[in-house]
Image 1 (tube, rainbow, N blue to C red):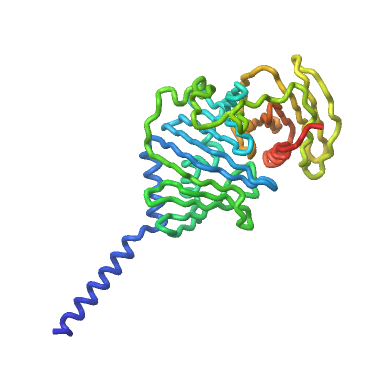
Image 2: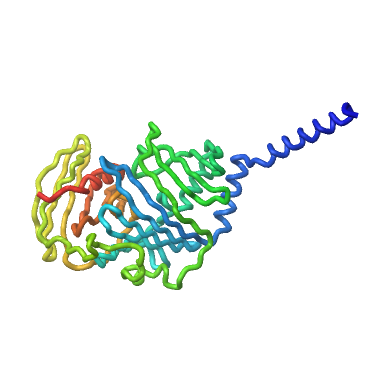
Length: 345
């Protein structure tokens, strides 16, 4: 009787083991499910903290993303160090970079975020997994952990990224690393909701330029709750601490353009470029070709002309910067980032 039962026991054990093997999804199964999730979702809302190790001191953002299929985006980034919010907005009118506390907006025609989408967008994370045929996947505490290539044109030192997803494909954490696997950019998601509802004017520019649309995001405030005053129209020259190899700083020329005091710093050598600094007293709206680009402390706008000249525009503490020249994008970003935390001379 015992001998007759033994084959049945072995068959049962084998069946359970075989069922367990087939029950575990392969990376290909997961990628197929991820593609289906992207196709089926109508949008999402997320809340996260973005940490960027661009210098000696990490910079942190609170990041709130709203996406409504097919092309409505609202990304609010609040610098924890500066207490200032900027918004990247895309709607039927175009792509905007909004700075509500200065009442300034910058509109331009762009393929953003299809062209060079940032890490905090769900589509960017998922497509980096789908597109990398050499992806690696493992399970860790009931989460999918993917290691894939990083492809960010503004910083070619970023080569790898790791992405953590729950079993229902919601992101919890992501890191971008250099060639030595040191994490230079991290993002921790505290909230992620598929297919939420949105107010009718959620992606309207005028609504997003008012503080009433940002109840949980501070503008320019002091710890005592009083609104801080921007510095006066007089400011010192801010000299970037980073200069590309083979480049020498030239003249610093003070000029007046349209009644606004402006200074122009010239650089020549292996790259030739000029850096313009001004503090306009009135809000302005510009219309340019370009795309938003994360500088770590603010959002810049990068544009390129047909003669291979690039233009990078950004704002820092009321000073508007515009760099123009033949630098590669990565070098322009490094120069811009080196203006952060520098006092005027």
